Image 1 (cartoon, rainbow, N blue to C red):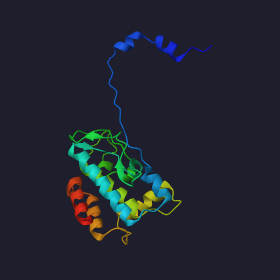
Image 2: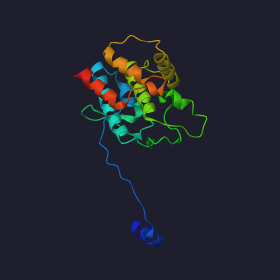
Image 3: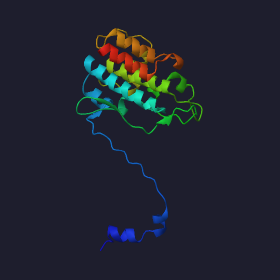
Image 4: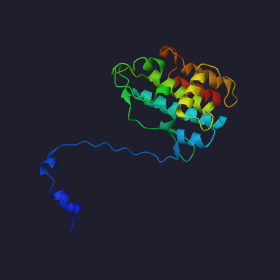
Length: 207
């Protein structure tokens, strides 16, 4: 007869019971899927993109108000609940906004220019401004989805062309929203608006 689970527990070294441990539990809201998987099944329309933009920037503004930087914003790490509300998730790369260089995470195409320049170093300075840049790339991908069936390298090339303003015409979101998004994509981190100011701007535009 195989030993029971209880028997295995009894045989464990009792000294382990005296070892202090701290376990972090996260209670997360159930979501329908992430933007990456959802965008492969459908193309988001203007009102949906605006709602996603507002939900993401509100969440990012809250995170930044706690002096925390997400460090890995992407389509894969933004989720949609049953009500269609965007939720930022995957906090495995979160760091404190304390000016201390740390290991760089995230997906290449979402990284801000100043972060890319630090990739050859073991560590880099991840900031609130780099989060703002990454969120701008996420919104770009929703406004200008890559052609169906594109490979990852083709999608990245397509996105690079958009960043370089090769493609400009779009009718999904108002020009005022595009102006905000373009400021978020500023190559100079000091020239990017804060998440809080973006949140205020989007609220005014949608009012």
